[in-house]
Each structure stands twice: as structure tokens, then as C-alpha cells.
Amino acid sequence: MKLFNQCARRWVILVAALMAPPLTAEPEALSICAACHGKNGVGINPEYANLGGQHEAYLVNQLHAFRSGERKHPKKNDLAAGLSDSDIQELAAWYAQQEWVTQNNGNANLVEEGLNRAGYCHACHGMQGHPVALEWPIIAGQSAPYIENQLMGFKEGLRYHPLMVNVVKNLDPAAMKALAAYYTQVTKVD
Image 1 (cartoon, helix red, strand yellow):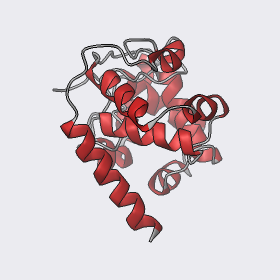
Image 2 (cartoon, helix red, strand yellow; image 1 turned 90 degrees about the vertical axis):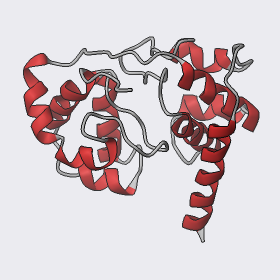
Image 3 (cartoon, one colour; image 1 turned 120 degrees about the vertical axis):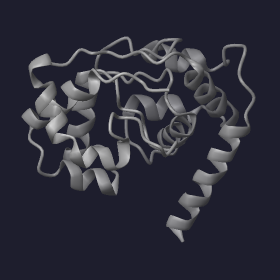
């Protein structure tokens, strides 16, 4: 039943995201996210996610997960706790409409190794980090330190997704660094 409820919630979020009109004004709650992710969605620190150009449905899902505590992060859980459903929808729409920025800040010598290691990643995140499912994140162009930290978070149990747990279980830090080097230099495709 829990899986059914999660699937139903995702469909409602997806339909709402697709039907939402484009934003013209900054969301009232933007300052909550902009302190770390910038108004345009570019993280102010390489360890922070870039949200600009990200899938709106993915952002809605993550903000709901932070708000409910399903996704654990002390600062983000506290900040998201005060967001209404409307705030979440507006923030997700805002960031989804911003321009995607490619960080390209990984070790250039590891890009080919990262490409060779990305086989498991391609199944969900696409050949170049652009998934077809709007509920999954675009990882192409994210900052290398951010990608490494997220992979390590899945491995250490700080983040959870049943598929990601299996993908990262045998990755060592060097492999994570190579994957990050590859994905950080991939640009967004239209």
C-alpha cells in the first residue's frame, strides 16, 4: 500500500508540475533556498546542488521529502518544514525555469575512467546524465564535489534509494571521484 501511495503522489506531483503556468515573479519563499543555491539555481559552494534547469517534478519530490523528513538533512529539513505545498510548487517551477549551468570542475584526467564506470548510471540517468523520468535528477553538469558527496551519502546510508544503494555498494572513493569527473563536464541536452 505504501508503494501505491508513493506512486500516486508522484503522479499527482507530475501532473501538477506539467499543468503549472510559467512563473514571472520570484517566489516569496525563494530566499530560503537562494542562500545556498542562489536565485538562479547555481550553488554558492561546490558541495551544493545546482537547481537551475533541474526537472520540476524531481524538485517537488525532494522538497516534500525534506519537509517530511523522509530525506534527512538537518538544515534542509528545518528550512523545508515551513514550506507550504504552494511554496514547494513555486520554488520547483522557479528553479526548473532557470538556465542550466555546467560546472566542469572535476579532475580532467579521470573523465575517461568515469565514462567507463558509468554503465550502471546510464540505465536511470541516461547516457549523459539526463534521465527520461522527470522524477529523477539531471546529474550532468553538477559540481564534482556535490556528486561525490551524494554517492558517498548513498553508500553510507545518509541518503536512500533502493537502486542507488545497490549501485554504490562496491564503489570506492576513487571510483566516485572518476564518476563525478565525468558527469560534471557533461552539458545539458535539449
